[in-house]
Image (cartoon, rainbow over all chains, first blue to last red; front, side):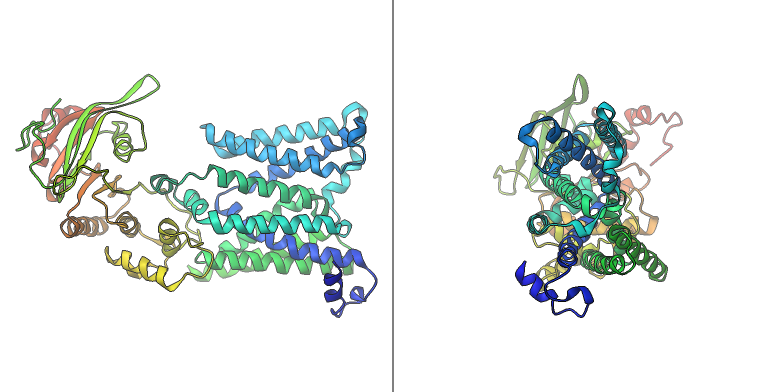
Length: 289
Length: 257
């Protein structure tokens, strides 16, 4: 972190002065780590039509936090523990179970997601209001606060970024084939169950950990908009990834700065920038065809 | 059940040609439903065999069985030129879903993802691009390399998929309804292509189709399937058979073919 602070000190912003405003410097580093992560995951979320699934994961993450909060209140062993870890476990379990059920059933994917999503939300609200509890303490999760980010969590996200990059290099070809042309992938003997499981588990971890920074209400847009914007103009997979990554990164930095100077929510600001990118690429789309 | 009822080859006498795939007594069941039973047929190299039958007759199931993707009863034996028995290398052209027109997947992306481990989102190495281009040139489609798959016509897509099935060059080429969704011009091109491929690589081609009008022009043999082989032989023989009329409910003599 010291190295990072030393680098930021070189920037020409008033909050970048040495020895102060560490929360802002942490937030900037967090944005630099999570926006490429969202940009990368987004390409596959959009490609394999999982945007509704990632939305459902956000709901399950909330439920996980409700469970974690309840556990730490009920048992001494858990008191003081961060409910986020319980939420991560819950969301990963949710993602794996979903991948499994989707494989085993003949129901349409969106129906399966609907089943899981509504169950998770109902369970979350049930637990949050259990014994007459108030829901207000969870409001912070809905909006998120990126300035609350801790260096440890940034390290965790960096680790996840590395894992996702490795998964991408090893499995992207197969995941792409399986989503673009299932029969072709099948005939080539490609079985993507485990890659899909790791992929959805990665989304689960990313959504859960960053939910407290970005906010539950807008987190799914970060998984959908970069890929959707890139899809408007990209002609091949290289352009698709490049545009998705760059728009996530640019919107991340611009959104954070905007939120600092006018005091808006960072998650919402980033999302609005992405929406602008989508609108711009949408206009250029017409000229391509 | 003998397949070669009307063929010039004696039933069960083995193959007179150089290489041959022999399927005998194939049966496939799902639960307690019998999808295929007692299916016998031979495929010879250099020949195009057309598989016809109504929807749900088991055509796709038969393909999957030959591809080794389904548990089945009966035997499939393959004999290479020279009499050596091996596992056949099979190229498969599946039926294509309709792609999202905006899908940012180029022909190069789809092709290299299925023949190489190099991640498609990184810049393509020159040797891989050259290899894909060479494969596409086998079906005269090298000009399509940078096109998005959503922008291809039905015939162009079939040619690209055919090029993929020919890498590596297989012993047997299977095409699942290659002519559906292809216009007349594309159909002619594709059939010429198959003819070229079969003579150039001396492989056997098995395809399914619902288009009986052009069967006699390109098919050496036709198999009429409805859970088992009802009729097999030269196109004219099968199309004029009673079984063909029964299956397709044609009451007025030779309505088709």
